[in-house]
Image (cartoon, rainbow, N blue to C red; front, side):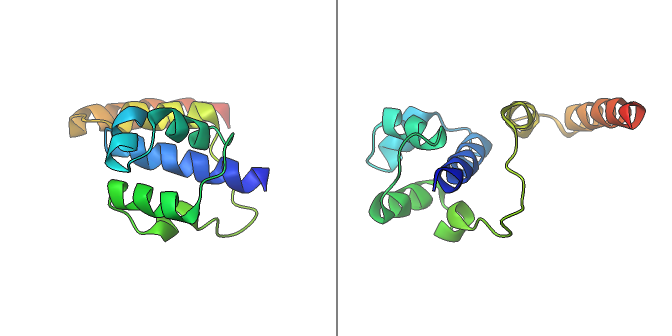
Length: 112
Protein backbone atom coordinates (compact mmCIF):
# COMPACT_ATOMS: atom_id res chain seq x y z
CA UNK A 1 0.00 0.00 0.00
CA UNK A 2 2.99 2.32 0.40
CA UNK A 3 3.17 2.64 -3.40
CA UNK A 4 -0.45 3.84 -3.47
CA UNK A 5 0.17 6.34 -0.65
CA UNK A 6 3.21 7.70 -2.45
CA UNK A 7 1.35 8.00 -5.76
CA UNK A 8 -1.61 9.73 -4.12
CA UNK A 9 0.72 12.05 -2.21
CA UNK A 10 2.58 13.10 -5.33
CA UNK A 11 -0.67 13.63 -7.21
CA UNK A 12 -1.94 15.75 -4.32
CA UNK A 13 1.28 17.82 -4.29
CA UNK A 14 1.08 18.41 -8.04
CA UNK A 15 -2.55 19.55 -7.93
CA UNK A 16 -1.92 21.76 -4.89
CA UNK A 17 1.06 23.46 -6.53
CA UNK A 18 -0.83 23.92 -9.80
CA UNK A 19 -3.34 25.93 -7.83
CA UNK A 20 -0.67 27.96 -6.05
CA UNK A 21 -1.68 26.74 -2.59
CA UNK A 22 0.60 26.12 0.35
CA UNK A 23 0.09 22.99 2.43
CA UNK A 24 -1.25 25.21 5.21
CA UNK A 25 -3.75 26.97 2.93
CA UNK A 26 -5.00 23.69 1.45
CA UNK A 27 -5.34 22.32 4.96
CA UNK A 28 -7.44 25.33 5.97
CA UNK A 29 -9.68 24.93 2.92
CA UNK A 30 -10.14 21.21 3.67
CA UNK A 31 -10.48 21.62 7.47
CA UNK A 32 -7.23 19.67 7.98
CA UNK A 33 -3.83 20.70 9.26
CA UNK A 34 -1.11 21.77 6.88
CA UNK A 35 1.18 19.34 8.68
CA UNK A 36 -1.16 16.47 7.82
CA UNK A 37 -1.32 17.56 4.16
CA UNK A 38 2.50 17.43 4.08
CA UNK A 39 2.56 13.97 5.65
CA UNK A 40 0.05 12.70 3.07
CA UNK A 41 2.07 14.27 0.24
CA UNK A 42 5.21 12.49 1.43
CA UNK A 43 3.35 9.18 1.67
CA UNK A 44 3.89 9.03 5.42
CA UNK A 45 0.20 9.01 6.39
CA UNK A 46 -2.91 7.42 4.97
CA UNK A 47 -5.94 9.61 4.41
CA UNK A 48 -9.55 8.68 5.15
CA UNK A 49 -12.21 8.83 2.48
CA UNK A 50 -13.88 11.73 4.30
CA UNK A 51 -10.65 13.74 4.38
CA UNK A 52 -9.86 12.83 0.79
CA UNK A 53 -13.27 14.12 -0.25
CA UNK A 54 -12.64 17.41 1.61
CA UNK A 55 -9.24 17.75 -0.10
CA UNK A 56 -10.72 17.09 -3.53
CA UNK A 57 -13.44 19.69 -2.86
CA UNK A 58 -10.81 22.19 -1.68
CA UNK A 59 -8.79 21.58 -4.85
CA UNK A 60 -11.99 21.67 -6.94
CA UNK A 61 -11.23 18.34 -8.63
CA UNK A 62 -13.13 15.04 -8.70
CA UNK A 63 -11.81 12.47 -6.22
CA UNK A 64 -10.79 10.24 -9.12
CA UNK A 65 -8.19 12.88 -10.09
CA UNK A 66 -6.46 12.10 -6.82
CA UNK A 67 -7.06 8.37 -6.63
CA UNK A 68 -6.94 6.96 -10.16
CA UNK A 69 -3.62 5.14 -10.18
CA UNK A 70 -4.48 3.81 -13.64
CA UNK A 71 -2.06 1.30 -15.04
CA UNK A 72 0.05 -0.16 -12.27
CA UNK A 73 3.07 0.37 -14.49
CA UNK A 74 2.52 4.13 -14.70
CA UNK A 75 5.70 5.66 -13.32
CA UNK A 76 5.50 8.00 -10.35
CA UNK A 77 7.17 11.32 -11.16
CA UNK A 78 10.47 11.80 -9.40
CA UNK A 79 10.94 14.57 -6.86
CA UNK A 80 13.16 16.40 -9.37
CA UNK A 81 10.44 16.17 -12.03
CA UNK A 82 7.97 17.60 -9.50
CA UNK A 83 10.35 20.52 -8.83
CA UNK A 84 10.70 21.24 -12.56
CA UNK A 85 6.94 21.08 -12.99
CA UNK A 86 6.40 23.43 -10.04
CA UNK A 87 8.83 25.94 -11.53
CA UNK A 88 7.05 26.15 -14.86
CA UNK A 89 3.45 25.59 -13.74
CA UNK A 90 3.24 28.65 -11.54
CA UNK A 91 2.16 32.04 -12.77
CA UNK A 92 4.53 32.33 -15.69
CA UNK A 93 4.34 34.25 -18.92
CA UNK A 94 3.72 31.93 -21.88
CA UNK A 95 6.98 33.03 -23.52
CA UNK A 96 8.92 32.05 -20.36
CA UNK A 97 7.30 28.59 -20.37
CA UNK A 98 8.24 28.20 -24.06
CA UNK A 99 11.85 29.18 -23.29
CA UNK A 100 12.01 26.64 -20.46
CA UNK A 101 10.53 23.96 -22.71
CA UNK A 102 13.06 24.70 -25.46
CA UNK A 103 15.97 24.54 -23.01
CA UNK A 104 14.79 21.21 -21.58
CA UNK A 105 14.08 19.79 -25.03
CA UNK A 106 17.58 20.77 -26.20
CA UNK A 107 19.14 19.20 -23.11
CA UNK A 108 17.31 15.91 -23.49
CA UNK A 109 17.77 15.74 -27.24
CA UNK A 110 21.54 15.96 -26.75
CA UNK A 111 21.42 13.38 -23.95
CA UNK A 112 19.67 10.77 -26.13
